[in-house]
Length: 371
Length: 127
Image (cartoon, rainbow over all chains, first blue to last red; front, side, top):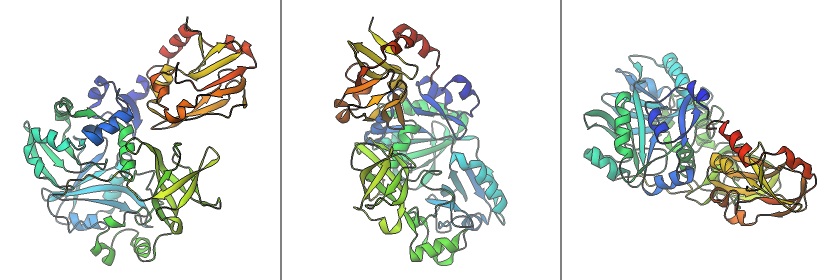
């Protein structure tokens, strides 16, 4: 994009690194972010699946809750079981609205006697307002604006990061700890958004570029932009906020019931509990599913999904080309009675119905590290 | 002199007799990134200048390809169905999209030659 357009955008601490690497920058959630590097989305995607991809995700919001009531206060805003989270463990959950929609999805980590929250960049300001309005009791909210976040994802990620922080090898999927890397205090978690084994590393903004350069210099590592981040998460069947989930979709419709703790289902006590518990008991009226176009034409967001009679039964919410699958992949919502794997449907792409099949997610099996 | 003429929408046409071969420019394929699918028109269809004639899809998005000149489609590049990456690898050669029989050859005069197109592209910035 033009220099003028980039000038109006916020920059992560890695902006100069992206430029030096020859990245194509785009505006994303108000930040100038690399959508791809010279290697291109296909090569970057494949590199993250076969070696190790390095991602700048510093645009995401990092915040911290402390205080005696932090756990109880957060549980009043999310359906996830936060009280049951051991120190050093992480959980995926959602801020739900009072009518059971999703305001944002987030990862909560219990560490250092408090809770760390990582939220979507585009929702960061709204989340802060929501928390400030709704948190009750002895709880303090602090935005960690001076911290950056980078992700290292792929089958070689553990070997690479092990050279800089050997102790991180002991982390299992969805656990986190504090590590010192070359004198820098880093919070490292074994998590990510690609379906691969990998890590997310939160560190002080002013020390991020130096560490990024160290990782980027490793022979197994190539930088990966937002374009491949999107195709990787789509193949992994992971939701993108504002597309696959939003204020109109409930966690149950979205296939995220697994993230609602047993105790929370029984007790309620989170926004939208009435709708969410009803859908858990009776089933939702629509469900998020995987959709595999039979031909080669990708079906993009907004594409109508039709049944055999030509009646619209849903729509694609994310769709594109899956480089690892080697063909088009999509996800979307269809009427609950149609949401069974193997069901033939058609997709209305450029006014032409094209055959497709409802499939189970993910398209590419997860390779998480579960010791 | 390559004989290619370019449109402002980044299509090229190479004329041989009354048939023009059409594709997208090297700049366009670079901007698109990896091409994963190309939808080609029916042979026999008539297209007007600047009318949508094909669709090219990258990993991220679908883009229209416009006819740089008017004419009747006489052939499409079937090889792109199995190997859409030809558009990236050889945009002005094996990655051609379609051939059309020109109905208004005078339209060619309004297109840019190689040098004029290079100037045009350099004025567009990175995007």
